[in-house]
Image: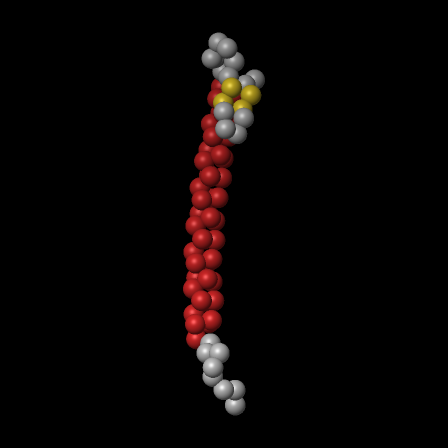
Amino acid sequence: MTQLNNFNSVQDNDGLMSIEDLKALRLRKKKLESDKKARKYILEINHRFKKMKNKKSNEFFKSMNPFKKVV
């Protein structure tokens, strides 16, 4: 059986793999790709949320006037 690292695929010296090994390798590659896409999507959402949050925070502080009298 071949050994698979998340970043580097290490195969047997002869390069021959059984059908089960090929299927397992293909499934692992698909899972890694889907995990990468999911992490990228979550990162983009977090980035957009952080940008909106910072914008709202900045607008709030800009709207405050320290010289305004409290009634």
